[in-house]
Image (cartoon, rainbow over all chains, first blue to last red; front, side, top):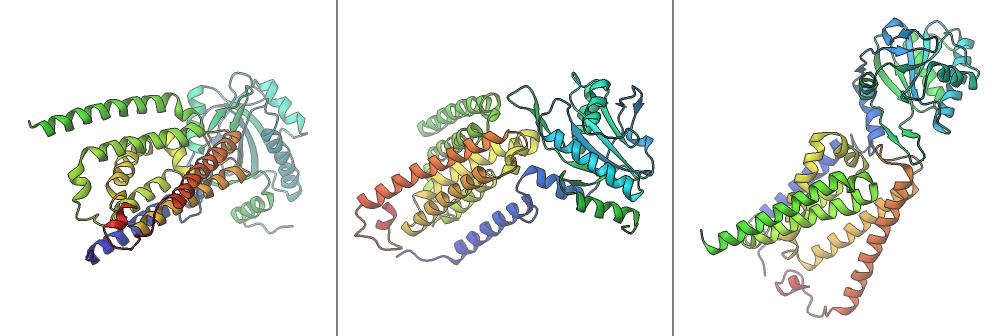
Length: 210
Length: 200
């Protein structure tokens, strides 16, 4: 018979606890099993400062996030040739725009769609994209970064990863990113989570729902 | 140097060459697709760790901290579980920390521990780890097959389906071998905690 060693059992328990806690920390308390959910959870605890980059507007002038001081920005990443997700993003942005105007927050919230397809998306194509959904140019800007390094900076700050798909287009982790007045990324929501989004915006502004 | 040290040194050199081949081929070929990333690189790295484990037989059989084999199997199990999460697969492609951690911990903490601990495990512990391993693989294949959203940011959605079916195939084949073994081995001398049951 083999003598039973308590020290070995204790070591086994310790290894189990260590492994369990490593996986616990890695998945943020078993809530984030994918990189996308980890990104969203991390943002909520630690807002990220977004560096400003030069973005070319549909009107051919250059803007940046700093131009919109004291406004809440809702940013999403699109490319105009996209047959699927970016259309959903576009129509939800149009719905958001209508709701924002209805609530009278048109001066406080600006929607920005950033294209990451530098070769194909010229300002004309960007304007066409907004036309597709009937959006108004006043507080929905569709922009494209000026240089590739600017685009990489944006992608890194926001945590957006773009990979090519098999049909010449792109696949990316599409979502609506909320930048508060200090240009910090505070929340990332899916395009179909508008009630949550509006709740959050009202919390920023302390405005009662009319 | 003694003969034994010469043998160890030449074995280590061979393993190092194999390791660099696996490293380069993974980075260039196997990490481009999710199926090969999960089903080729991870088993290859574990196999390299196993080869390292076979080189040091004294360490293999004379460990004080691993006499029952369970401690080493726990380490191997947690390491494998850690590297099957979608989040860590993604991070190992993008960040250098996770990338190098994968290529270091999978051979050493998983493959070597497996070789050092499996023979020492009792029949009960071997059963437990086998079935838990199979159950985990089945669970992961279910996760990848039925998930509505893209789990890995660096891979397309169809690749999830392929990986799901691949994991399902691997687990099913392993399970069939296990069933064959169960029906074909003489278990009549089974007694827990005896040396003879370690050979089962």
